[in-house]
Picture 1 (tube, helix red, strand yellow):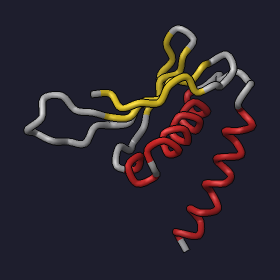
Picture 2 (cartoon, one colour):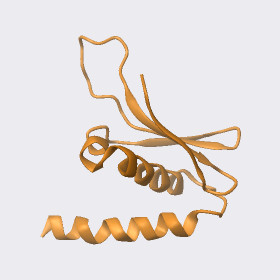
Picture 3 (spheres, rainbow, N blue to C red):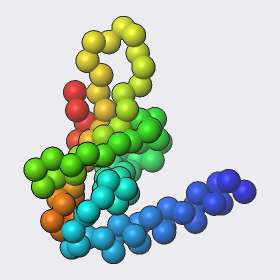
Picture 4 (cartoon, rainbow, N blue to C red):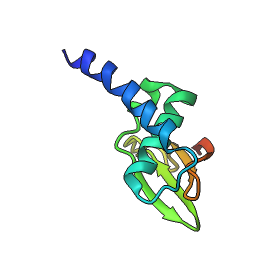
Length: 99
């Protein structure tokens, strides 16, 4: 049952993200939806799930959506996915892995 629920939720999120494009992004929750959907499209659902939870913050007209690096004690620098979202129009500016 859980898998069926997840399958139903994903199309709803895609529709919400598509509806948001072209409109201002005024809160972090909307930025999270847009950013994580863009990351899933680029890197795949399984990869993006491994960096949960995600957080967003606003800086100079751009929403940053970042994953949480996995806890690995033997690495000094940890990588994580990030998406940059325009606050003005909801456009995905960039999706990449921070090294």
